[in-house]
Every structure is written in C-alpha cells, then in structure tokens.
Length: 273
Length: 329
Image 1 (tube, each protein chain N blue to C red):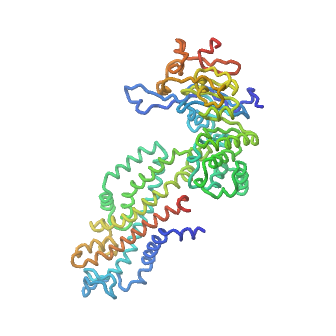
Image 2 (tube, chains in turn cyan, blue):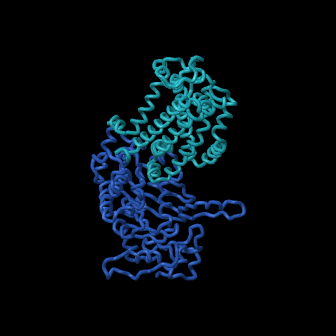
Image 3 (cartoon, rainbow over the protein chains, first blue to last red):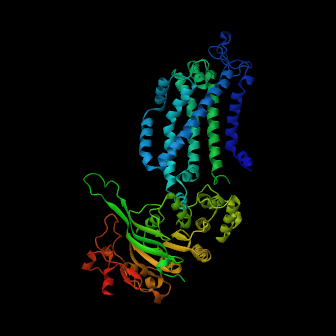
C-alpha cells in the first residue's frame, strides 16, 4: 500500500532514481571506473571525450569520469551531512524560538546577527579559524546554513501555534513537548523539506566556492567544486571539461529538488489522494 | 430537573478579572493601560444544567472561557470546580481537571489537525490522559464515533474529507471521549449552515441526557440559546449585566441591554414582534470603558445615577446590574 503510493508519485520516482543512481555510483566508484581519480598522465592532457575517457581528461591528464564519480562521494557526504545537521539543529532551535516567546528574542537576535554576514564569508571565517578539512568544512557550512532554517521553521511555528487545534490539544491537557512534536512539527515538514533540498544544492556550490578560494579540501581531492573551478580556465578551449561535470551537478540538484517535492506531496494527505 | 442548591454547584467563578496590558503603554512617562476583557465576573454553574452566555463580539466571552479552563491565567479572582480551588493546583491535578472539563471550539475547520486521521484525533485525549490499553482505546473510539452519528469507516479518513456538520460531530466526540462532566461549547453551531444547526443541537441535547453532562453554552444567537439553555447570562463589555432563568430573561428582561438584544431576534409571527430598540453608537473600547455603569453611553434610560457603578440587584434569583432595578422598575 505504502510502496504503491511511493511508486505512484512521479516526482519521487524521477528524483529518487537520479539520487539513488548517484549514490550507487559513489559507493561502487572503484568498480565502475578504469582509472584512479588522482592518476596523472601528461601524455593524455585535455583529451576530448572518447571510448577510453568518457568525459575526456583534464589539464593533468586525469580521467574526468573517474574524478566525477569519486567526487560524488565527497560532495554527497558534505551536502547530505550539512543538510542533516543544519536541518536537525535548525529545526529544534526554530521550534523553541517560535513556541516560547521568551526564547524568541534572544535566539532571533543571534540568528539575525549570523544572517547579516554573507554565508560564504561566515563559512570562510570559520574554516580560517578551525583549519582545512572535510569535518571543519561541514561544520562551517552547517553553521552558516542554520539561521535560514531557523527562520523557516519559526515562521511556520508562529503561524500554526495559535490555531484552534493546537489550543484544543492544550485544553485536552497535552504537554508542551507533545504539542510541539505531534501538532506543530508535522506542519513544519513541508517547508523544511523544500528548504533542505535547496540547502543540499547550495552546499555543493558553496563547497566548490570554498575550495576554489583555497579554504576547503586539498586541490588533488576529487570533488565537484574543485573539478569545476579547475575547468573554468579551459572554458574556451575545452568546454566539455566544464560542461559535462556541470551537467552532472545540475542533474543531482534537480534530482534532490524533485525528490523533495515528491516527499512533501507524499506527506500531505490532501495531495495524496 | 436541575436543582439550584448550593451543594449542587459544579463551577463557581468569583470576581474573575482578566486585564491584558496594552502594548507600548509601559514606556516611561505614559500611563500603563489595560484591556479590561473580563471585569468582576461572578457566576455559578449547577450540575446538569445548560447555562447560556450571550453577548456581542468582543464583549469578553471567549476570554472568560479561556480563563475558566485555565488556558490563560486570570488577573484576579477565584475559581472553584467541584469545591476545589483550581487556580492554585499542581500541574498534574490541572491535567486531571482538563479531562473532566472539555471545550468544543467554534470553528470545526480549524480545530481538527489536518494531518491526523479521525481515529488518531479521537485517540489523542485518551493517550494524553493515559486512559486504557490500545485495544480498550480502540473500542472507546469506535463507540464514541457511533454515539455522535458517524460510522466506524469514517475513522480512517482525514478531516478535510468531511463537511462542517460532520466535523463538528467529530469535535464533539473528541471532547466527550474522556467522559467529562462539564463541557464548554464555544459557539458550537455558529460556523454551521442553518440546516445543520438543529441536528447538532439535538445531538448535544441527546448526549447531555445520556452522559449526564453540564454545558456552558456560548453564543451570540439568541434563538439558539432560547432553544437549548435553562439559565442565561448576558455579557456586555466584560461584565455580566443580567443573569436569570430562560423564562426570566426572555419573558421579563430587566436590563436595557438585554431588552435591546431581545428586540433584535427575528420573529415570524406578527404578534410576537416587539418594538425594535436600536442602540446608538458602538461598543466602547475595553481599554477605556465608561466610568460607572458600562452601558451608560448607549443606554436609552440613562440618568445621573449611571455615573456610579450599579450593584448586582437580586430579584428572585434574577440578577441585574442596573440602577433602574433599584427603584423596582
């Protein structure tokens, strides 16, 4: 019954299909690539796509297909963990800020302060203080994403918490925790999913920007941000170098967004008929 | 019949006041202002009766019921429920109290969680109050849905699949599932079509008989109140201006405001029609109510006495807050 519902939803089928394909590629990267992503070969620099090198080769003769597939590992780990951490933390803070009036002014003051800084600048500052590395990058991007999620969740909580059915729950004797979890949180899920799929998409790009500025991972790491920023130099001479990995990123972002839309519809009983 | 003895009192509200501070009035230099939503309200609810509370929009009806259910705290006053002081009880006793005192809200479209199935909605009060095992709860939910005239099959649906009248039945079922003894009905039929109203009112009367309920029925529709209530309170600008039995209020209204309200009921028979009393002006702002009698600004019988606060005059159990009654008019 439930599985039938999920399969009947086109958005979930398409978005989920793309997402699963990428995850499978990332997990089985050594099996589907012929070359190591860091294998340098000056004899095959900047080749156009061919049967041997499906996506061509880059300026150091590395196989772009291998780099994109291995890059999926890094990019997915970062974007999924940033979305998950900032989603959970942002949701909890946002629920408190929206529900308890006293907490609201303090929390929103801090969040507005964080929002006032451009998120990239904030992430740069955090990485600069903590040092390079995947964990610090995830931490930095999580912190810079939290304020947006807090705002989204808080706005929904405020619009829901004075509705009659919440008041009815209170008059039944429900505790604050139960009201938040059973009555208010379900209403936050759809804006949260939309926000988080956007966060995942943006994170891939932000991670690319940080790396491009030399504040992310080391340049030989195969990750989408690095591939794209290296390819930028060759856009006139070898456009496929940029376009093919770029298309992969676009496809993933599209897949994640579509999956998010599908999940949102699935959770809404009204649209789910 | 209902006995109006002292020891049959279910809820006793004494000198209830609820003032809301006006935003921005607590700046230095400005006088602190309050919205006097409920001011010095006294009443008792007797076991088994249906007490009506009427008054126009904004007169404090909803604030009063939120206060007596302790959804908001009163500024001053005392509240006794079954002879227990419910303003000074622990939060665990308050939970127990809520099981016994339930509210049916006005808007059946807003008072049901849109993402819960009817079964979950009805089971919630039982889970919250830790009543029964899973199987017992299932049976109670199924019994209750049939009591309010819906079918077991409906339990597996979502609220948006029901009409207004059906939703209000669900709201009533949710209020009654914990077997309360006191139910507050906050305009339970005003959001419904006229054709559905009588069905819901009849259902409420049937349930009152079979479950031994006491109702506090809030409405601004006097014809509904006349149909269902045994005693009626009339509220104006945070004050109870008149209180008496249905006969006293409808046959011999004493307060000029009640007279004006009654003259506004549409009547079918020519001979039942009374001369329409049209009140001038608007209801005054509760931030700055008139001194003395609150009704004096719109009262057709205003005298110089009205600048002092009228007492509650008791005429055979018929309470009126008006200087005219002092002279026995």
